[in-house]
Length: 213
Image (cartoon, rainbow, N blue to C red):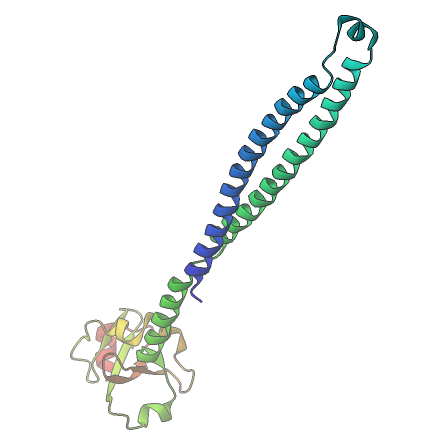
C-alpha cells in the first residue's frame, strides 16, 4: 500500500477519534446536567413535607439530599474523567502520527531518487576494465588525453580540445587513473555512445604535451 494512503488513513482515524471525544464529552455533560436537575426535582417531590412540623422535626433531610447529590456528582466526575482519558489517548496517537510524518521522507520521492540514480549509473560515465573497453558492444571507442595542469581533455593527436570532455569522462572518475593500467583510465559513457581510453599527462603544459607526442 502506498505510504501516502496509509498516512491519510491513520490521520483520518485520529481525526475521527478527536471529533468523537468532543461529541461524547458534550453529550455526557448535557445528559448529566439533565439527570441532576431531574434528581433534584424527584427528591424534593418524594420528600415534600406534609406540614411545617414534620419539616422542622426532620433535621436530616438536607443532609440526606446533600449526600445524595455528592454521590451523583462523583459519578458525574468519573464519567467526564473517562472521556478525558479518551481524549488524552487520542492526542498521544496524533502526536505519534505527526512525528512519523515529519521523520519519514516521502516514499514516492525516495523511489524517484532511487530510479534516477540507477539510470544515471547505467548510462554513465562509469569506469570499466581494459577488457570491457575492448568488448564490442556497439559503442564507439576513442582515445583521449587528459592534462591536469590545464584541466582539459584533448584528442588522440593533441590537436583538438574535447569540449565537455571532463563531464563525459566524469569529474569523479579522474581519481581512478592507474587503477588497471599506469596513467590510463577507461570509461564507459553509454549516454554519449562512447568508451574512452584516457591517458594522463601529469605536470605538463599543453606545449610540453605536444612536444611529448
